Image (cartoon, rainbow, N blue to C red; front, side, top):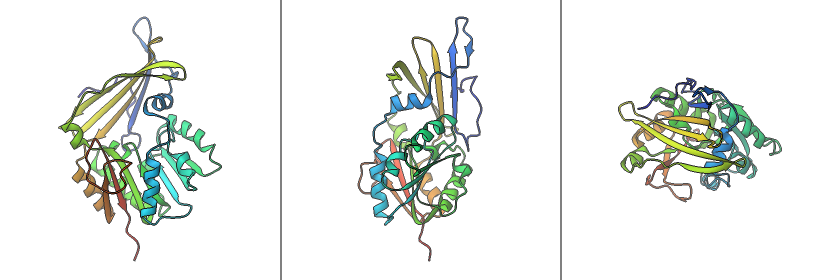
Length: 284
């Protein structure tokens, strides 16, 4: 497996699982730190800004769990806040948590437009200390898979179990690595406009089967200037049986699988993504 870029910053993976590298190549080949490209802007341009498909799923899930009224929802690993406004529009109170400074800045802009229904908090699973505070906890876009060690993942689900009220639900969305490794293809470069500037995205995968890790690097670059921004995501390769046992060990009494956000009923994982839904048991 290739090593991360030399000028990246080492982070505590249990709390801050990403590395962000900004650089621009000068005429003599040196690399200088710059801050022109925004990761939030690049993410929105390449991964979409439309109404998230997760929201109708979460709304259906709430009904199926008999969760009604002005629910309290935690979006942990909220990123730039794509889920926050649509969830708040359902009449729910939403908290977004993320460890990345750039993501928090974008999420706070979203929160400012929601009439006080959205709260933004810095942190990740390791900072979650609430007790019975939420009806639903969602972790969309792989946050739990960023936790490399079994101990960190067990601690995270234990904290989530404590934070959700009895009868409440947790939704974990992440890669189905068993399917991905069986159907693997190299990712392709792409281009998009970011704030009217042409930006090229070059993804790369470094797979270490012995270490049980998968490293995804997105390098965004401006061809006209040579400016680059790289985002490094490191995942634990977790078999589905390991996901299920983690839910059970954390104390969730019901675990359902969904192969996609549009799927109306539980079913076996059938593609590159997996959605696991757990319920905290009712008291008594």
